[in-house]
Image (cartoon, rainbow, N blue to C red; front, side, top):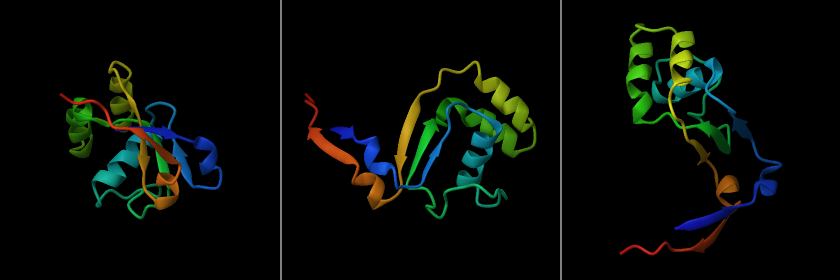
Length: 110
């Protein structure tokens, strides 16, 4: 499926943006994945309509596990990510965010 996204529709929405991996981004990811991680900034309560930033995918899973176990510091975690090829995502968390999407069409799947 293909969608267009009208970012102008989100001017009034709560948007959290991360331009690149950072300590703040790493702690945000950990706080969302692990409820026992104490962090003031998270999205477990959907306080943000949209979160934009690097994808914490399977390539980073080992690094995040090492961080969670206390084997690496957050600084080391972020430093190691500089060598990874990261993609970015838009993560929609509310009907306001989803309303900014316009369906274009279904992809041809054979």
